[in-house]
Length: 280
Image 1: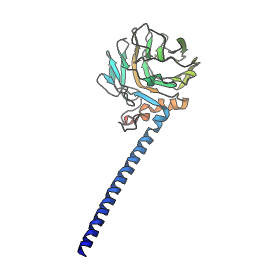
Image 2: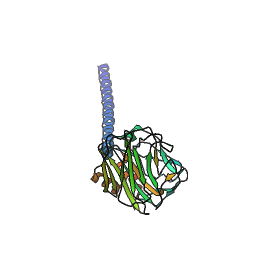
Image 3: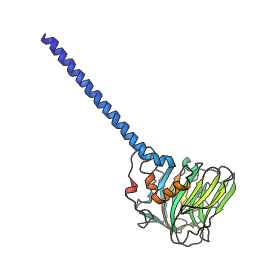
Image 4: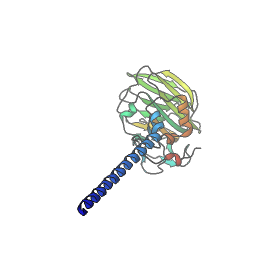
């Protein structure tokens, strides 16, 4: 009789142990699902807008500019200075020298069709400047395949250029932006049209003429080969794999890229830069 009782007690103990293990495993599964749901929830806005890269210039030292979204970090070339008086937090000061710029290695994401490119700039009045260039590391360029090209005319207005099967497309803006004041500049390409926005307002628009040519070229921020470079401050440079609407663009301009980059492209939690940056 005692033997039977002992066996029964042992089985009951084993059953309780199994139940305890199952409960623990179920708790772990549920907790993991909650964490995943939170991650996807936080990243929903970034995924919706297709934010692929964001260079916020908050590193404040070193020779690398961090891309807080997907790790397309930029290498600092020449003599660029970190400054505190950015549009959102810190910024980068460009001296107007062709050897001083930020270089981002090629990734196929930068051949996106459609795409949007945005940047805050505070440029001084200077003859011929560059915001962003993507057609190789030498000048003259070996072939006409500009996919992303924004420069400042000697008369201080922005110019967009691109190529479709080697044929050039171009928009000359109407707004003076090399005036020592902060301006937000954006190129929106939806696969059929190219739009220029300055400070959230349409400043020019043209049909693209077809699908923009692509290449394996790196991105140059603040200069192009041939000693044409920006003089002034850059902040909040971003690349999206979608064509932003005017409302979306204005939200990005007003709120900053950090709001859309609180979670990286894989859904893993990263530093919430929005808590570290203040607007000016």
